[in-house]
Length: 206
Image (spheres, rainbow, N blue to C red):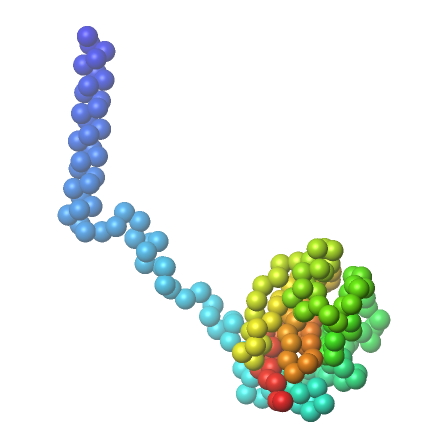
């Protein structure tokens, strides 16, 4: 009997405490966890760290392959037929010291057909398949992964990871078709925010 009275008393006390807590928050009209809702739409602590000033950037234009883009004036460009290499001064110093690093931070390769693309294997009648079909085959061979659609100068393209591990970061590529050519953007250093700005400045000129 005494045991049941004790249990009933505990239940009543807990109910009173719960009711008091509810009444307090209702009267004060404050959420229980205000810090979560107050910070939902706040900017990051360091928004200025993402800002890149491009006022003094230079423009690279190639009439033969029909594109132009902007790049930092300190960067070095190497134009090798249908391969265009963009690298920082620091990368050039590393290359001069014969360090084992990728030849550039960012590059663009222009192919005139599917058969010119670097492939894990040669497919029968490669030029008779489309770009997306070719990418899917490369994914099946585990040479590419993580396909997602991106826009390059308002044209749909495909961004993929190559599975090649370099400098502690995965090497990404973007494929986009325009005017019977395939443009391949190779992002060799995913750390550099400037590369995103370079890609965003890319324009087809014919």
